[in-house]
Amino acid sequence: PSWPTTASRGMFFVFEGLDRSGKSTQSKLLAKHLETVGPVKWMCFPNRETATGMLIDLYLRKKIDLPDEAIHLLFSANRWEASRMIVDELGRGTHVVCDRYAFSGVAYSAAKGLDFEWCRAPDVGLPTPDGVFYLHVTPSEGAKRSAFGDERYENTAMQTRVREEFKRPALKERVAWRDVDGSREVGVIHDEIKATVDAIRLAEQENGHRPI
Ligand code: T5A
Ligand code: NA
Image 1: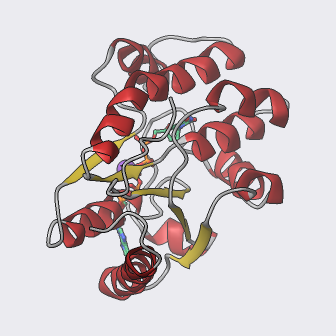
Image 2: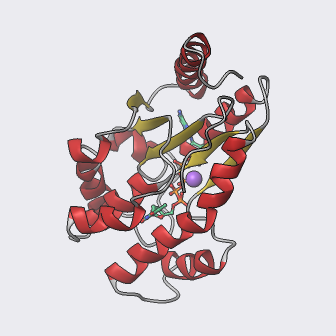
Image 3: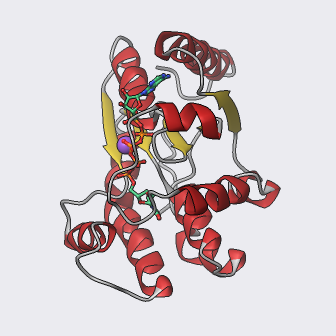
């Protein structure tokens, strides 16, 4: 889908990170903050409610097995199911805040050994975010949070490989990627993200783009 040409489109922010890094907490806080300036749509991937999402949920809960390539394409399809809606919301001036996106798709599948470029291909053409916040949590801080559950990637070996994949420069080229220290207190992290987002919004307004 192509970007709407209107000068008043909403802004699109994505949160990425390892399991338990605080993405849900921080993405919901940012959505709440943006509600003070206009309409906001919060969403998450995988969206387990859709046709592809139901299969993804079964796979993550280890109820079904799928080849690595097949589940990778399902995660991408799960985003494509929402792509038109994202473009439409932004076109209406709604800000979109998203908990995980294509960067998780590539990092988790590449961590399993799939080719990086192969992993990236199916997501090419999805709406590009205006900003990505990557929440860093040290392994020791992560371990202090609630224990790993039973889902498929919730183990130290996998998380360690995913952490390395998220460091790849090629993952973040052509996108406004910001590393955020997610080991601090919830409110401190939110204040930093809020300040960044407000600065981006004001710059856009001054440049005459996307007035909000
Ligand atoms: N996946 C996903 C793929 O393989 N390919 C893909 O394309 C996509 C999109 C499911 C899995 O799917 C994989 C990645 C995942 O393994 P999910 O449903 O998003 O993805 O599951 P998780 O990311 O594991 O969700 P979590 O809820 O575990 O992590 P969050 O959202 O990062 O963390 P959050 O905010 O829920 O916080 C976790 C805990 O920490 C506390 C919270 O209160 C909560 O208890 N917390 C803090 N504690 C101290 N200090 C802070 N700053 C804190 N922030 C939060
Ligand atoms: Na989450």
